Length: 278
Image 1 (tube, rainbow, N blue to C red):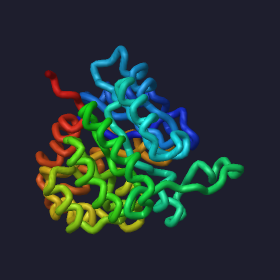
Image 2: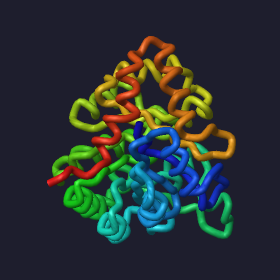
Image 3: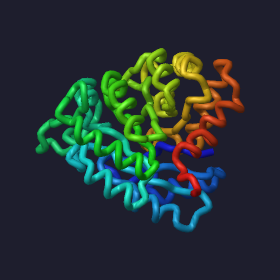
Image 4: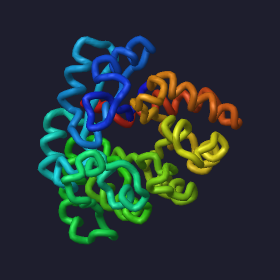
């Protein structure tokens, strides 16, 4: 199994375990790898240290929020040159996050203004920076994830990224509250080469994310283009390996093939993240 989306301490909000204990939990569960994600810090160096003595491979990346100045090619270059494997477009500081009233850094640090970030078509001025970021991700053969961008922004981004040579594209939990992407549109985008993520966090905490809804979304997209992740780390969520098993069980209970679901939580995300051997 391979989890490409987990949160750990230290963080600006409480987490159930730190990097090392999180990685040790995957090791004990027999995972081949994981990706540490933080909304407000690069996890590249943290992942290197957490996985240094383990069989489980631990990867990191960067989310383009307030700490990077938003859609910032320099921050992306630094993360990728240091070994980062995933670049998430704005997440907690995306304009969609503010519109939906979801948690942001400025909620815990209220002295900060409530600035948000967007890309075309919501913010046409970001086009050049997005182009540079896509070129950097392509050169590193890394994963470009859509973060919490709106559906319209994701639809604009993917062809731009593909034209720049990006081969690893991930729709970050598209059926989550942000961006609340319709399954039909996610299927169309994935037919052009992207993967769509479904998370255990959705099952555990998203009010409308019933097993039936998530299974219907997976069917529409097709299990060959689905990645199952935990997106856990919250104190009120189970440990990530347990959370992913709950997600697999819930989707299998809706009639989806269990073996294929397990591939969505193992072979597919691992092949998406792990560098190719040249």
